[in-house]
Length: 296
Image (cartoon, rainbow, N blue to C red; front, top):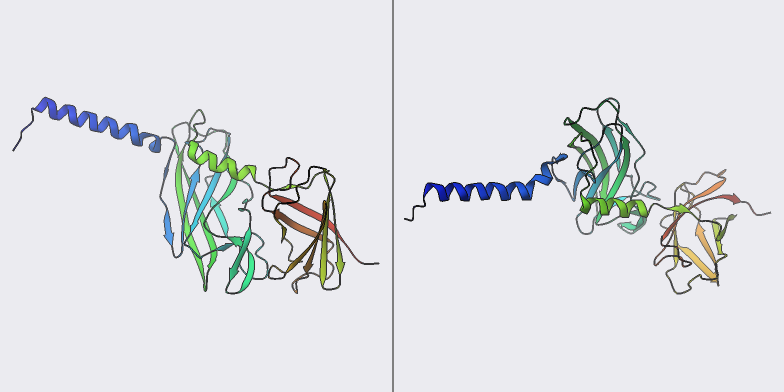
């Protein structure tokens, strides 16, 4: 058996420890995560783009969800079926959290019923504000109670206690991989259709017509067809959306939901077009809030 001199052994141990800290020290700096939780068909965790928060500073908390293949959860406004994911934050006194920003929706199916939700991996974000009197070096416990409904051919309600710790630091240091995901989410937050569009909505019996016309001459005709995701239950998520198009004008004829309020005065939601809208606009989603006109 080969026996190494004590000096050589000490040198090897020292190098091993040094490599360990070089590789893993960034993960200990700023925050420590209590890890990904596997609950039924979902995996989830709380994540930060910052490796630490500064006293009095704003920061974002991410709720990351990875769904097993074939499973989905629902959007903030599910449609004809479904329950949206929700999260209740538990932070120390003095912290303030904003609303939960949901991932952009896609069409999902529960059995044969179409609804609004998400497959695969998504991120939900909340902006938070730290109090000014935090002590640098302190560890802050960030906890949350989450609930959701996950569906495939069957549905499974789920609940979880999530948590992590984040260190109070003097300067912001970012995890660049996570920051890119957070930036991508923030970049895609829908904005209202601007002055380049004329938007209107009107009732026609059991149908609602949404019309949006582009003022831009650079409108591209060869991109995807628009899909409307309603946020006030006025439109059936399982209903068909009939499209007519004439140059820069779109007309979507959609089925009114049985759940809709009879005196609803607004049509609100997101309109999506795969590939974007032309005219140099990068987003695929626009938010819409327009008066619902009744026929004369």
